[in-house]
Image (cartoon, rainbow, N blue to C red; front, side, top):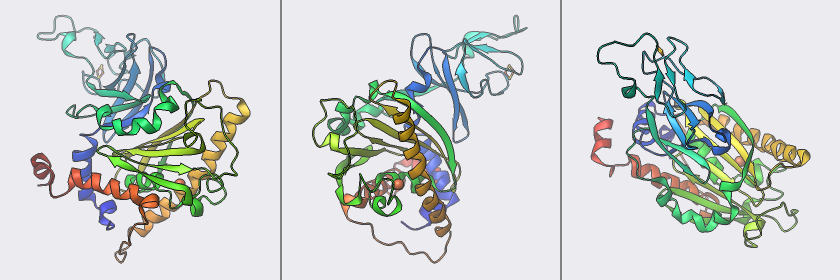
Length: 358
Ligand code: FES
Ligand SMILES: [Fe+2]
């Protein structure tokens, strides 16, 4: 794709309206809010978000904006009985209802019941928490049904979150989405980290669907078996990693023993916020093993980051002419991603998109 696909401010404005406000965007993993009252704050575009598990055990993505005069209600992460705004102490429950508003009795027309924190459409898929800002998106799960034969046996919903981190990289969000789902770079960029067990040559493209693209990264015969894993995994599944992108911006790798996921949120054209984490099939991993997985991530993530940040500088060139993609098993996932982007933003997009572009 031409560099303006990544660098154009006007194109990014369109992406924000047509993709990130309209689609299901992953903001975290359910293990981050495992008990009633557990919460964390984040943001998507300029929407402050409060992700919280209620007393009914439902995970909700609420607006983190007070209904009085728009102060942010919560900060950071933790466990709370409720949320008291630090400006005038309006107090909200774990489900976002306004419970108390001091000195407001007798104010004409005021009814606490009319002032809950705004609740965004929320869907938990495979234990990952997705939000849809405009509330109009069709349910997420049906459009990902084609992935299930490949991932069901990994039992992701029962896996245990054992590490999370937040980072900001100086690159376009699409560069990172594309990077995660193409195996072409594995044997070069990750020569000593990932190549020894998941080399480029053993990648096999999986047919993409409406909401995703995927490939299977086969493990070399010499690489030691990692585990434990669900015995229902097939021989192919326990000797490979399954990497996919849920469009637009959730990328994840399911291995027999662990899962490594990245939730991407654009911050302008040249910056992307990443909330990433690791889950394991086994609860309470041995500390040494746990640390070895974390160390591996901190070995290969900087290898990607370095390239994606120099690539971003390369994209500023006015003389860059894009080359062809590698064959399907190596970069076919990028082709699927382009098709998705074309479907959302291309010339055959729907009427509301045309209006937004004008
Ligand atoms: S802005 Fe929150 S109580 Fe006034
Ligand atoms: Fe990589």
